[in-house]
Image 1: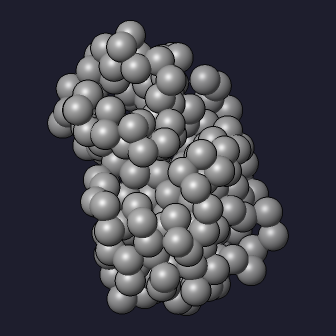
Image 2: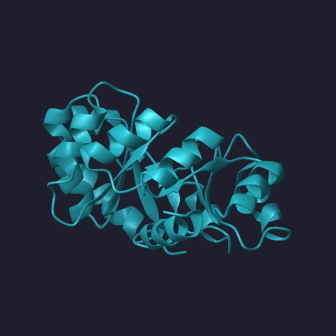
Length: 213
């Protein structure tokens, strides 16, 4: 899969909902119920970060939830690409980008949203054909104002900003022309997940899904 084909797919995924749920799952046993609550609430796109031993099993469980579009986050290496794909993830997200990572994603036909935080990083990815990128860490990199500034010289790039975004500032990002969607973990707080409070998570998802770009 060349970068252009991959970006067509990641663009399609990013337009399914205004918020991609960013999930760090500690127990795969709750993964399907978590996914069901978020999907039922209107957030079908779920990014399971590869930060815990349970992550790959959680992806496997979530792929069985009807209507879910399950991806892997914190994809850092070629082995991460292969493991995520083998677990059933249909896309990947990375905080940055390396030649080895991008080559692996292209070889494995695995759509990926690589991360950039500066104009130079965004330009290097654009040069390779990546027109859909993750702006990370969003708030620490200047927030919505910084992302807005990139739209002038780089209008051909669309972003999924992630990092420090919540219901208080999400509108600042979704108002931007170069924002396709945002990544957020606030829709599934640890206390609600650990307590199995799926109805409350579904309500948070409904509120997030009602946002518009």
